[in-house]
Length: 429
Ligand code: PMP
Figure 1 (cartoon, rainbow, N blue to C red):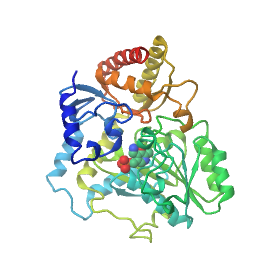
Figure 2: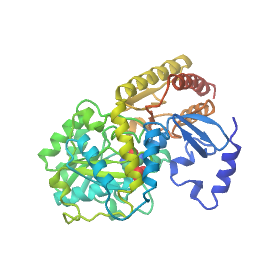
Figure 3: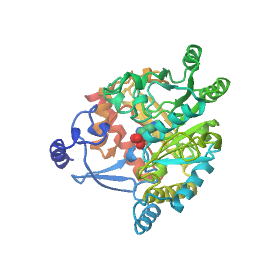
Figure 4: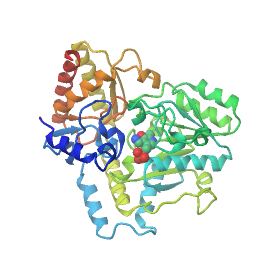
């Protein structure tokens, strides 16, 4: 396997693109080597510009839950394209997708579509502030909620990958209302409420996927919600990654928790740029044009994205792959542990539904601090060995691997073999 064309494009791309990429994790910075440039994808396979085929466990960081170019999604997109691409006026399909989304989340009467997860979350924070009249927001260390100023502190994803504590260019004023708590530690949330009486709410990834996969322990989310009710503060559940992925009704359905405001993205756009935030009527009626909280978008509710989203969610509901996801992830967990054991490598495997990833450490990983104990050099070796054996996974220890419902028995067998070889590479390094 060689990567000559990717290498050429990487060199060429650096002239007019920052680091030859449009999103930092794509630069492969923490695993070294040149990033792969992709030519095409279909089903569970993704093909780079050198013609190398991989089983895709990135799935564009989550959206492609049915696999790439699902027949029904593609048909819906082609049909929508014939009617035009964007109108700056409302369409029937926005109403249709809104109903599918609201029906899936019991705490959501109304939804507003935007163009990315970042936009969904920053709008949700504005809404929480508008509704409560309070300014402060608590976020958890290691959770990533997009790149808006107020949330670029103690964040996971690319910031964790690049070991950045925050971002330059974020004014102090923009983060002065952001308080940081520890994941799975309700006491750290309570400590903020004891100090401040102007907290609008808490934002959380219900299953964290941006520090690697980290699960809420016991009743953490339910207890958090109960506590916030006593403080008249809102629970903002960021389901950009988990919405329609953990379950059709997101992690909330699985964990039995109802958010005050839910953020969505990724899967609901079927591969096109979409985000959304939704809540019960009383909260959503704060949003313009009904209320005084302003938020808008030229391309919001884009017809092609709506068509792709409707087709994806309709097919997902029909397939109901959640049991299969659990079985496949359980099998991968077992293989990862077995092969690590065989080669004498310490790993911890965290998984939830169709999100899974191994940490190269001992013990448990229940928060960002523990996630950061992982040996990222070992991860880098593991990563490249998997790539060279035909598996494309996120080029970072701090990103989840995603499963699609298209994965076949053959794909799984190939993945298992590659994991064996990759664990061997880790010890031989
Ligand atoms: N929230 C979560 C939980 C995410 O995982 C992400 C992206 N990985 C975002 C928000 C931001 O979404 P986007 O990249 O679409 O802006």
